[in-house]
Length: 292
Image (tube, one colour):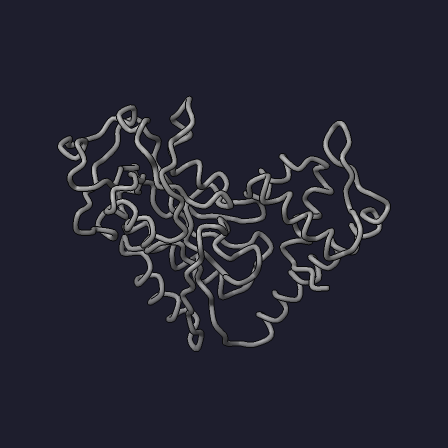
């Protein structure tokens, strides 16, 4: 029986909320995905940890016994990771990324970081959009460049606030406009992030400016899948202004969109992470961001 840390984290969140919907919002996952993982956990354990009640869910007797153990395991793992990272004077800082960063931020910050932390290496790790924490919550990243909103348990520093535009096929009728009203996109099929991206998926579908459900043409897991879908005529996609040049493709155009609040690009790290290497990288980015 192999129970993963993510499943234990899901179990603890539901046990604390006693409501799957609220727990899913807290974890930044969809309710169906959370329910599925709970069923997987119960199959692995061989017993039920929750039972349905009128107000949501309640812990079974087995669940009540398991809860403090799960909490302790998660706490000990988090503390153990920090102790392990602090055990050596040098090591590797893992930076999670879901898209290209650009904006003159990354290279300049890395130069400052290497000067402040001689001997430390840097590893760039591409993280799928099905993990809105950028690899932070499962410990596979030390810091991450991600777009807000982010799951609970993370601290953030906003690096750039940018308008959202739309990427569309070059022969799209709206491509003739210099600026596209968001109302003109309401009936367009959109390229969507995976459901596991939660509120981040909603943000890039423009749900914060809608009173209706978007039309989803296709779901994509990587930037390359997104732009392949756009150039194939399967839909349009909202893109941050600063990413327009990074993802320039033949057969695709970018236009600013009126009527949408801006997006925020941030560097994120775990709340409990007080390591010197993470602090040094955040400080380097703060210095760079003020000059951009």
